[in-house]
Picture 1 (cartoon, rainbow, N blue to C red):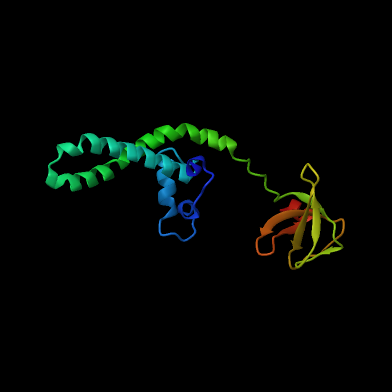
Picture 2: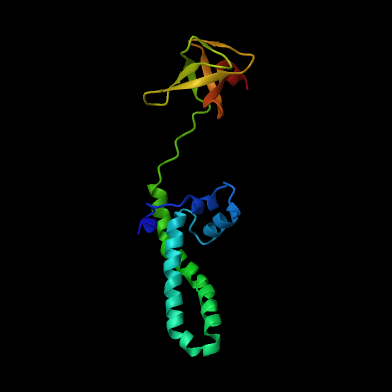
Length: 184
């Protein structure tokens, strides 16, 4: 029940959709989910419902078809039924979960807008390539961000600057002057 509601999640299974070095090619699993219309649904939910429908197909086939097979071939027929149950299981999972994809998409939080290209003012005494802070208006309380200048530039308190790049290594933003930004 926890997996069906998405409250329990396995990183190894979700890793199939990302590139974290798993042996399964990410584009294959993500492409298969998109092809059957389940790209927006959590993978654990898809696998849980697929297991349910696969089990139902296996149960019914073994209940009604397996007794018709000769005793010597029952093991082989059971294996064929288990493998063949995947096809109707995938189809039933796709039909059952497609309406959920739109609902889940509406429940996801909106992607915050990018701050790159915003104009702000330097609030630290100086901004160089190693340190500095600037204030940017975001329509609310404002943002005070760590900023870094290009190697040949320095900024003073009150200068207008524009965010042009996020520096992951220092979790800061590269800035240029508003005048330089307007010229480009």
